[in-house]
Length: 118
Length: 109
Image (cartoon, rainbow over all chains, first blue to last red; front, side, top):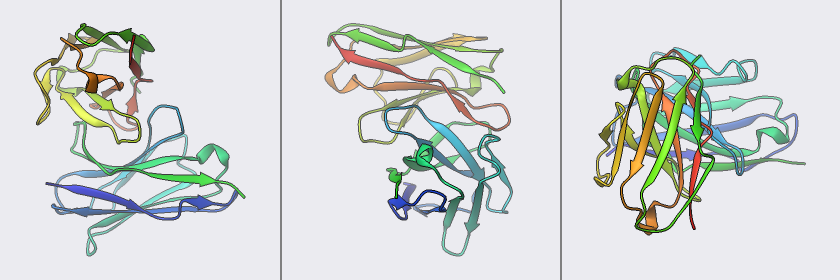
């Protein structure tokens, strides 16, 4: 059973950088899947941030592309998210998830709330 | 980019009633690329239905999906107390960005 777990600071200052890591267990991050970040502002819907393959290939949401970097560490079975120049609008629950090509997100982390505030 | 729109925004029903949720795509979608998720408060979304009509592992058979082209439906045959939640549809076949519908909240009447 694949499990994903997000970790990182729950509070980030405006104009700072949000950094999160997703640890994958029960399966290899080097499998034929992509690994995604999705966020959900309080009381709102789901927004896809981007994804990475174990080779390092990435795809990003155009609306966030200029501020987002997703990276992978296959030795640790982890992938990470960095979002720069954050504002209050970036306050959200951030989820990591697994996705196969042309398939839905089948495994999700429990999510972690990140608040942007001074 | 295919945009999916869900209706209604909120569905108020009683336990035991039938729920019918709609998902409309801005262009034709392959049946193998339409999925539904359930999200309860404080929890991550859970995959319910993939390939338009296939139930994910452990999903009870009161949940069913149907549709083709641009119009898709999630039906809950008889609502159980644990089914009151928010449901999202997703088109998962086109190139990124991945997009979700805005969600339908099924609430207790």
